[in-house]
Image 1: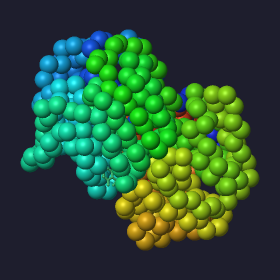
Image 2: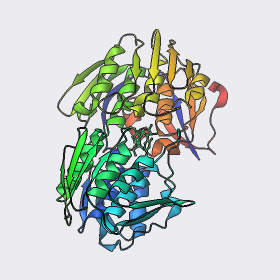
Image 3: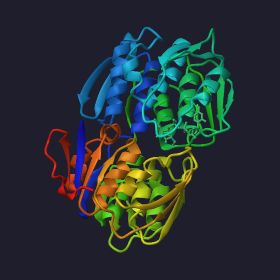
Length: 429
Ligand code: UD1
């Protein structure tokens, strides 16, 4: 069990290059199951969730050929069954639920172990199942598996009363080879929804409207191989942007799509941070005092819930009182006691956190409770005085490629140690 040790208080200067988007990659890789030929996926982040979903496909019979750190060729022709049997791997990640839509679309049946992964709160899948049922599948939740069966699927109108990223993606996967026209109303509009649609269209699918409330899919008989490059990770970019705002400094964040960062940039500007948008990069400069602000999370194009913990950490050191409202997930504030160990002054009641910013946080021994909560601990540790020790970094490594290298390159004092290594405890609280 490894840990991060951060000696905080260093300003960050230099450049950070952003990897491919995790949440696009974990949908695009299972989508290859729908294809009849090999596909080459470029700009894949080298993170644990991607390694796990590739291992699942390999276990199912696909051939995985790593061309380089960020390029993989996937040949799905060896996948002959709709039954996924590698329970251990599937229960290791949430996004394994995309296998449901992909297998249903390809084989009209699916048997997939119940998905696991980051559990910052209850994560239902009723909307996914509703979409499959609307297309004609019977859905059954067994003790630890989900079973989908259908004689024949037919295009239909799926109407989501709650905006769901996963259910929108799964509906697209199931519908892409389903005869007839499928309309997805109340669709999510996140950049990775558009990326999945673009990938499927590159394989010969007929999907229009991704990125709007209504997605129209005309089913096609087959999909062909393609080469596709995944979009940059909006949340990884936002996390480093928040880190620079928290520590102060001047960092060029490269390989981003500034359009995807609008809501994050707008909130950073509210804190007094300068953000200069360029073609494929953003420059983040924070020299003066950090100011409190109000924010609420919303589906895209609103402020992303996956940036909420990082901003709570950031605002813990802003002058004044901030209010952060979580409107996507119930109870996504379970990490706040960890920030309190670092002397953050935060009160939360259900879905709202009230933050009374203080000059400096104090290094402490904390835990990464999930991926983004872990990122918040890193930001708090970078900005704090003294040493912060972060346990359970496996969650952070699910979603951040080379985080130590990227932060060290801009001047952070952060390292990864094994539990056995002697840590100087004198500065820990
Ligand atoms: C995805 C992201 C996750 C992010 C979330 C919201 C991936 C792998 N994960 O998760 O990091 O926090 O989008 O941007 O892309 N809901 C239901 N029933 C369902 C599905 C969802 O009620 O069947 C509710 C959830 O409880 C939540 C809301 O819908 O309140 C949004 O969830 P959803 O967009 O589905 O999140 P995920 O796709 O699981």
